Amino acid sequence: MISFLADENLKRKIISGLLRRDPFVDVIRAQDAGLSGVEDRVLLEWATQHGRVLLTHDVQTLVLVRAECSEPEEWAGVVAYLPV
Image (cartoon, rainbow, N blue to C red; front, side, top):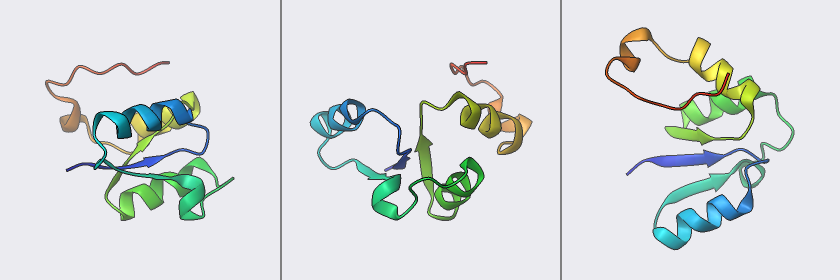
């Protein structure tokens, strides 16, 4: 099962919807992990260290993820929405 870290600004309705659809989904909010107000880099490092996928609305974080936190071969055959 995929584990998630929800950015502190992620809309609560999204988390509620995930849990309504699957009450056993493993999602933790950044503020519950003591990560309120940290820089994007710190949030991404924590998610990586704990094996979690970051859920965020922050376009700046998404750009950072795409540019610095993945390798080209990871994108082979993948179709994803990445706002720019």
